[in-house]
Amino acid sequence: MSSSEVLILIIVLLVTLSLMLRFILSGRQSNNLKYEKNKSLFSHAERSFLGVLESSLPEGLRVFGKVRVADVLSPSKENGRNGWQASFNKISSKHFDYILCDANTLQVKAAIELDDKSHKSKITAVRDRFLNEACQTAQLPIIRFNAKRAYTIKQVQEHILNSLSEHDTVTNDTNKDAASTIPERLNPADKTLLSSSKVAKSLGQTTDEFLSKLELCGYIENKDGEMSLTDKGQSIGGEHVKKSRFGPYFKWPSDFDPSWLEATEQ
Image (tube, rainbow, N blue to C red; front, side, top):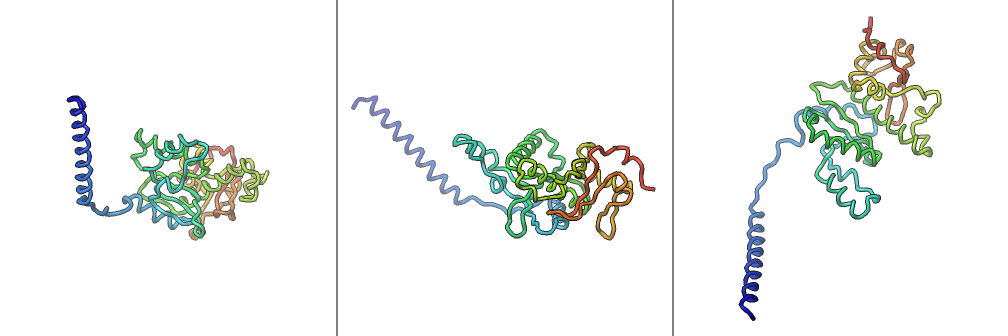
């Protein structure tokens, strides 16, 4: 064996011994690692909103918090073998703030995100856009609420119901065999009526803002804890759908005039 071959053998042995020693030391070190319990699963804002959510949920739904995206969504087979891992990596470290499920079957019905000031940053905006697109491809409604100091249970409930109903309408348009899911949304007479969330979006408002203005102007009112449509609301073409799979909600003309919200209730 030449001297050069001996030198190479020695180097290989030294590298092997170094790797083995590093592995042994890392194993010992991992056994000595310590952890601390977090004080709370939720931030103060998230915990506050959870209480409102639990009080706002329509019958038959349950809410869970801090759920991994990978436990709700899976990479599509259409991505192929090479795309599967890349797709999974994008969701593996992300979570939804809340998940709505069927109370009996625990089938996932919707994801809910609470958007605070951090969501205005570019990094978070990229994350939000990705989650929106991922949920859209999976046909999972994602409902967003702006974080604030106080919430109205009825407005939160209305936003949830409108979003779920709106999603079912879109799904029904692409799946005609599901026409019986929410029959009132498929009635030809309702083609010019939109949910509160859709009208609010067209006016550049949040659903909460829109509903607050409707109540202030006297189009809807709170009677014994239940929101109802007034005669004034009916006069502009509003409709109160009292029975649907997700509970009651309001619909308004697609050509809703913003000036209708300028005058306050007398």
